[in-house]
Amino acid sequence: MRLLELDGVCFNYGSLEPWIFRDLTMSVESGSCHCISGPTGSGKSTLLRLLSGLQTRPFEGGVYRRSQLLCGLVMQDPQVQLLRQTVGAEVAFALENIGVDTEAMIPRVQKALRRVGLFVSLDCPIGNLSLGQKYRLMIAAQLVSEPAVLLLDEPWAQLDNSGVEELQAVIRSLLAEDIAVVMSEHNPGAFADIVSHYWQLHAGHLVPGQFHCGHQLTVTEVKPGHQVILSAEPFEFRYQGDNVLFRSKQPLTVRDGELVMLCGDNGAGKSSLLKAIAGIQSNVNPLPVKVFGQRPKTGVFGGQLGLLMQRPNRQLFESTVIDEMSFSLRRFGLPVSFASELLQQLDLLSLAQRSPHTLSYGQQHLVALASLVCYRPSLLLLDDPLAGLDGAHLDKLWFMINYLRSMGGTVILSSHRALSLASVTQEWQLTQQALRVSALSSEQRYAG
Image (cartoon, rainbow, N blue to C red; front, side):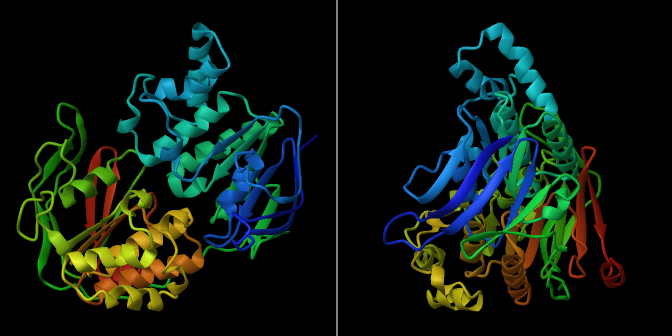
């Protein structure tokens, strides 16, 4: 049964704006699974909003939607969809709006949470969840209403490997129930076994495509120095008044020029550890950590340290990209020319006068990172920076990491998955409530 159809759709955000879509044609049948790929900023998220009915600006062409069709949309940044304070209340919100009896809500809410592998108390504060767990929560909040179409924006980047496997199982069960799934994804190969229709969105056109191999990352080998940037004695990491989140049983030592990979599943504590190193995680017990020879504390490191958060829009506040990048340069008394020079090296000068708030999720990630790299911190902390980036933009990210390390800068990068890169000098694995550290020799790195 046909659920949705785009017929020659053209779309832009205003009469003076360039066209985002040109003559899009697409049909979504019940029980089908579609995957839309395309460059960062090509309009994949906008297309999902158009399919869901949330994008209400005028457009040309026809959009067919089966009467009373219910679409569930999970956006790339689940934070923007959260409405309530607790897990149970968030999932129950849609049921409250249609007048479902309170006693009937609880089993439906619990079923939706089980389907996405989120086994937490209904009273659990949403603020205690990791970004990946919040993504699962938003999927559950859509599934509880039993939509005919589920729209997912970049799920692979937000979920760890077990989360992706659980999502695949959820999608298979939905397809068996004749529910359609449409996802945008930079890594379509992760869902190759369940996708029935693959599309490529490029230059405003949507055309049938094929799965492509993963992008080969371009990295540079940098020899670490001898200056200790970070050190820590064995410690227990816990929030104040709470149980131990994880333990580190061996000392940590990070020197200038190193690239450290911090890996772990959703909710393991990666973001909290990075924020504690930066001195901005105030609700944890004191840690025996020293950065540049002193205890981490808000504001003490100045331009020596940079932190890229998981949600880049939280770090963007200026009206243009060039002003965003120049802000810290002025703050630390550095030449503002560093900003335009870095944009030119990244081939992003076309974004200089754009508002960072109108950029795609992936472009915002890149601009937020460039705003840190341009003032050349000695220690750069990156919290899951790979989300929302296609191959070309990943190359730009690694260019900035290589650029900083070539000047002696140290980088600690968190990710759900380990990366086999010759330039990684240490791997920190957060698993089974333990932080396990392994230093890699050059032979081990190249063997990987």
